[in-house]
Image 1 (cartoon, helix red, strand yellow):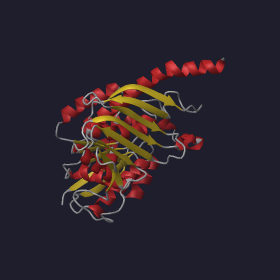
Image 2: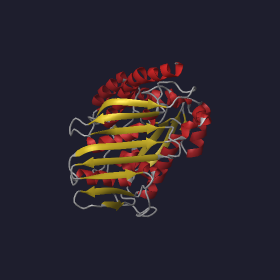
Image 3: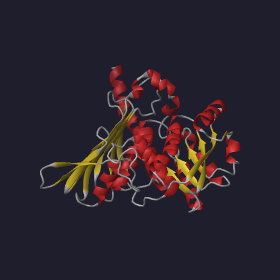
Image 4: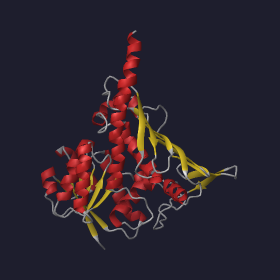
Length: 372
């Protein structure tokens, strides 16, 4: 059986989720390569050493030691957003790396986007790059996308997608996550949560979506004005003429972890909500009824762990994303490569520009009224 030696850059919460997914692979799939947890690096020595010991990696290393490690074949880039590009560039130069799993957002500036495109061309087929939009591997989303691509509901007309949290309403929560409160496009709700929504929209509508305008809401003294706590984008698809909205929020009270998507077309419609992850719904003109399409853990190759009819969850989709990363043995999957990641990043970057326009035109007007 083939072996792949893995290194993590980052030892935080998302790194724990990836460690779980890698360890879980053998429970779901019989043909997965043997994954050897080789090395962990992070900014703080004590955090990487603790992570190494707790999750079974061979060694904890400084970044320079990690970059020179000839054993590492797969790098997981899991650090703060602002250093994703730096770590990606470094990983490409590592002596034995053939796989790079890059968490979103892929970078933090237009300059980095351009450099990434060049690096991708230079790497060619020598390195496989996958971006952490594992929501695409949620069973119901996969089946909804398959249904959409069948053409049964025709050309899209309009759409609506929202990804809502409420945790940042709490000051104590914000204080623990100061690094995520940097101004867009490095931080903010659209960069953190909205990227998953943009990725989802692009899977259905293509990667040429454009922003027509943006809105921003939510003001706290400890949050920079440029860091959107709630933002909403009006969007246009130049290929089909479809229009719609995407909203990302960290301050929607009572929402939990809500993803809700609706797509309306000339012959019908479909919708999905994370509140009901085991099915999506569709409507065909002339039938006068919505159909609930129940979906279990519907993956290929077929697995039965823990059961084929269980409701899929976020971690399950992450496990399958890792399976695709290491094997590429599911050609029907929509895999988030670097081109996809950069297409999403373009929207995140342009969001910052549109939000700045909104703040200049409308926020100042609101403040003037308060003064009067």
